[in-house]
Length: 437
Ligand SMILES: Nc1ncnc2c1ncn2[C@@H]1O[C@H](COP(=O)(O)OP(=O)(O)O)[C@@H](O)[C@H]1O
Ligand SMILES: [Mg+2]
Image 1 (cartoon, rainbow, N blue to C red):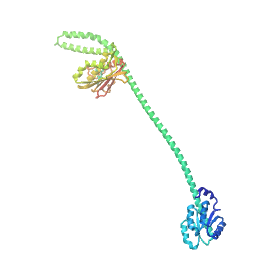
Image 2: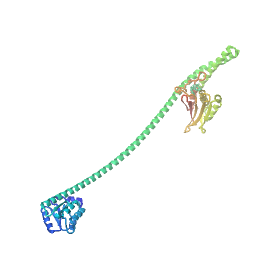
Image 3: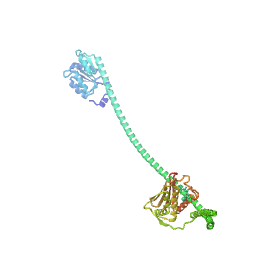
């Protein structure tokens, strides 16, 4: 097979000097045809056997082959077939006598380009050769063109593949960048949330300490007033009480004045009780700090107040933390606070209600808490900020003075702690005392 590129260059200018191979075992015919074809401007190579023709065609690049249809070694048809296996593009023109017309038709069927009958019509023969050369040129041109096209397609495909590779790596890099951007965004979001939470916590802390400050300001102002008032009322009451008692005892028990004086005495005793609460509220405590276990303080307080609960069928559930850190405090004052918490729960609870007393400590064991959790009616939302105010009470006159929680607040504050109240109307109340250790 001839290489395409060799063909391409050797083909240049071929129409002027086309190469023709002529095969005929009759030397006379061969000579006359050769001189006719060469005389028409073609470059001619001639041989007398099919074998020679096949060798020549393998080393030279012919534009057309002219061959006799009937030769001694092999027939022209056989030669045609063999030529086609070596070079399928080469156009073959066969010579034929009149009697061999059937062979000629067969030859065309097998792929001969043309056939020329003997004796030759020279003009027809040359014309046929020219057509064959032109046909060969076109085929070669088409081949070269296809080759170039294939080459171009290959080059373009390679370029395209390289571009695709670059694009792929660009996409991968962009994905990576997007991924790290997404991660960074997530981190920022987390930080933002954390920051928001911290701001919320701090705001809540601030709000609490602010309201505690307001509460203690209120209490100290009230304390001064109450102290002065108690002082003023204490001396007339101290004089009045024994006098009333004396006159009541002088009157007859069934007399009207005995009853009236008894009522007066009762009223004065009630006033004396309030004055005492005022004094407790305003007075500086003189007690000493001792090391206390809050569980023991609660137990001691319960020992003298349990009877009231028993009477009403109220259940007390104790949930004391076992290994609770000790605190420094004034026992009687803390008992007063606990008693007030228990009494308030007892007042609020219906018969057969339940009060849980729970103690525990913070994780760092730097503070202890005591929670009083009841399942009573709870505290109205609008009152929850007022329950620590002095004289705030929802109880009937005579049942409550409204000083219990304010006094408790003061005591706990003095111990360096605080009280928290949580409640929902209808769902019980939870009052918690926090004390430092
Ligand atoms: N456990 C509780 N359940 C419902 N309300 C309560 C509870 N503890 C306190 N309170 C409310 O707080 C108010 C103030 O209590 P306190 O200061 O002890 O005064 P008092 O007991 O004299 O009313 C009570 O009148 C009541 O309305
Ligand atoms: Mg009370």
